[in-house]
Length: 251
Ligand code: M1P
Image (tube, rainbow, N blue to C red; front, side, top):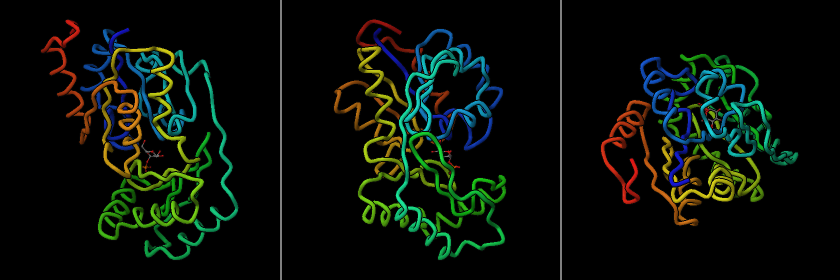
């Protein structure tokens, strides 16, 4: 197999925590019928199913959830592997201290603030129950105060056993050091052995949760990646891809 595509979901195929846009879905289903691709996300499979229709999941080679700590095949029917992660009491105490000290107003918050997923936890000051409006409110607050960046830096210094990344708009993903999205690339390289991988994500920069994918691609010396701002850019890139023939002589 020559080429495998790998896509992040939130911010790449869909707006954050929202369903795929109908006009993109139509295009992507057609594209997906002619190309091999995997999905990789910080979210759990339940959220993936909320955002992408089963028809599309069935066309994928696999779905890496929870930062690559869980892999499903056959559209979600077959669990291939999963990792476990138990946060230490010290880590949970540090998270609680941030909930106590954050300047984000308490009345605007909704529980839970910690979501236990396979191989990771997700921590959110405004809470996982935030509606769209509160997600935007916190996102603006965070852009101004850089709260999540501060939390990430402190957590990684104080708890060197974990890695922390900023995935979406209101939360941080926390998992055992090294158990990040690079697991997706390592799996594909070992099992599919493609000549190269094409990756698209919206957080391909140091500190972003897609960055580890590109580091793994560099280690394997395979592939190209694109940092996109939204699904419209992903669509434009996929359309461009059909316009040229690459050095392997394939479209
Ligand atoms: O997939 C990207 C991120 O999507 C959500 O982020 P947020 O709720 O902060 O916008 C979360 O599921 C997060 O874990 C995930 O990395």
